[in-house]
Image (cartoon, rainbow, N blue to C red; front, side, top):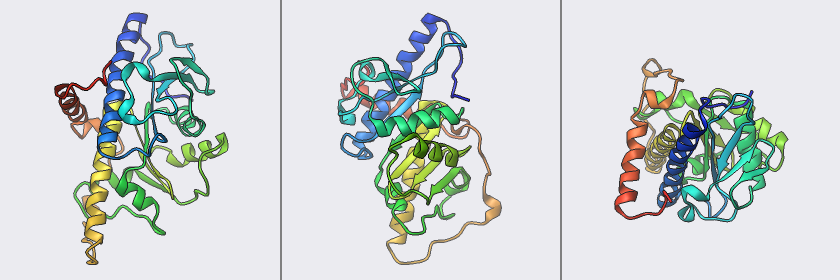
Length: 257
């Protein structure tokens, strides 16, 4: 089953796609500002709304060769799940195709996939025994949503590896990719971005605390929320992204062009 967003009319789909393009472009700029992108190598994608139920599923993604700081709403390319560029100028990076298309294909709830290399989550991915400690209040909601890939041996250079990652992710929303980075998924751009932000911030606290050499405190298991629903129904995800967009707008950023 492929990831599907609501079917819309032509005009509704065009308007919704532009809103989503602006959200995506804003997230690229924020990721760059926070130092989450690896030169020109990382990638974020979003499934597009369909006009008719039998339309082929399409997703938008950043074209190969651009830093996140350069990306604009109109500059994102549209691809099908076979990796063909349907609209826009530019090339789909192969490793991006194998990660994003396979997750979109196998995980219906993963409308948005953010794949980046933020400092603290990537450091966690490099540890022999990576773990989200139950040490901060954020962990009470995050930890049940995390899967850690300890089976990675190479990059995602084919569909077999993409399928392995997609199946490992399952119904989780945060995948710490061993020796690599992190992928976070959500039903929309705001949900995925806010959960990624929260996870990276929480891991910053954990790594900083661990650097003291003192043991981490352990919150009681009974305090876990065991929440696996949409992130935005527990967090102010939309408001968070809107706040960032106001900052970008005030600075005169061209992300929404």
